[in-house]
Image 1: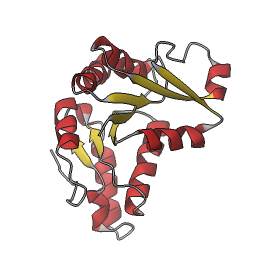
Image 2 (image 1 turned 120 degrees about the horizontal axis):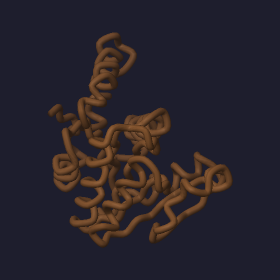
Image 3 (image 1 turned 180 degrees about the horizontal axis):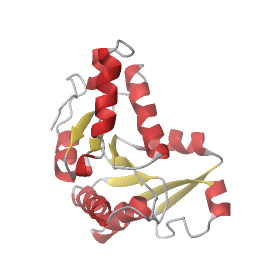
Length: 191
């Protein structure tokens, strides 16, 4: 395992606790010798995790679609060790998946959720078996967990859906899960 892909918010407006957790995650990723693969932005939690990695001397690989560069030049993390510019969002996700050994999901909006759900879907279809961890800062993902459980209860999804990911309260637990991950075992872990 050499790289961790982090999906997270680019919003500048979220509470400071979310930025603190993102920075801490970045620092811990670098201390463990992993490189960060992420969406390439300098703002929000994306920027916080990247700066956290750099604060500890780690490597940052940003993957950003061309239209973001045209839309808002201030969004790009110019200090990335490697910045990959893609044609569109789909190729961005493909590169992030290809470059990642594991996935961590911090709180975020629709884009973050869409990226995480795609990895869950790929795991369900047997197209990947990389670890997927949600960091549940301030119980941010409690509603999603409840919704997934309801899907299972109402027979819209199999019970094994709840084994496609794990939930952790913070960065240390998420990284510990990744370090001890065995693909042949169930992932489900409710903390």
